[in-house]
Amino acid sequence: MKMNKETLLLCVASLFLISSSLFYNVCLATIDNAEVEDESPFTYELGSEKGPEKWGNINPQWEVCQTGKFQSPIDLTSSRVSVLRQDDLWLRSYKPAIGVIKNRGHDIMLSWKEDVGKITINGSDYKLVQCHWHSPSEHTVNGTRFVMELHMVHTNPQGKIAVIGVLYRFGVPDPFLSRLLNGIRSVDKEEINMGIVDPRHIRYLSRKFYRYVGSLTVPPCTEGVIWTVVKRVNTVSPAQVRALREAVHDGFETNARPIQHQQGRPLRYYEPYPEQ
Image 1: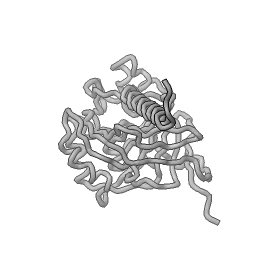
Image 2 (image 1 turned 60 degrees about the horizontal axis):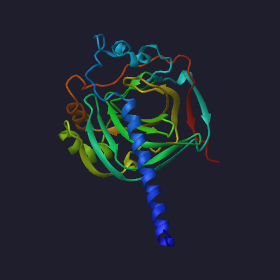
Image 3 (image 1 turned 180 degrees about the horizontal axis):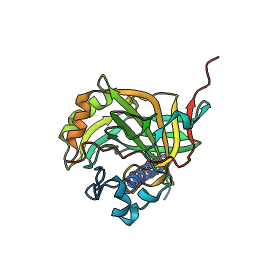
């Protein structure tokens, strides 16, 4: 059967769209499998049988939570930091797409159902898949813990994970959270379609950041995660933090894993060259 030029181009375009969709679905599956979805086996209650110190004993697949040497979060301590001046250490390229709110019990997650863009680190592309919130913050800076932390989770075709951490203190409401509050307050078992959500509205544009290699902060605590924690601290209102805490299941109103040992890992702080 012969195809004219227009038909051939249409077929090629269709194959490209299908392959792109399949890749994005693989990204979603990778993150879903990486982070535990059922929170019932673990808690954040220190000293309890299911608390953070015992996560590695609950499930054999979570052993690294207790035995790992590259665990997160850590304290971003100035005395341990290597300061580097360099430009263009990462590239961000996001775009709007359909997002849904899901209550995972231990946190509230916003995930995107379509390709929403990527970051590029050391020449490798990582697709943005989801973001979620911890309150109080998981990372600390020189021992200071903040009221909230947003994690933007990315993955590449090899299943590697890169997370951007954004810290918050109390102040004016966060515009990105304001857009999502109705969904956060009403989400229960079924996910809620939030329509088009633009990740560029997450205000973390800063050329100063910390970077180290760590892990997921919930079971199974998978290691090898590239962490980028932005130095700029954003603001969030008490009402917004309260909405997140009230939405999760009982016992998870505070969902921050304790600080883990640095274990001699390199911790780097990047800032751009000063303008000439």
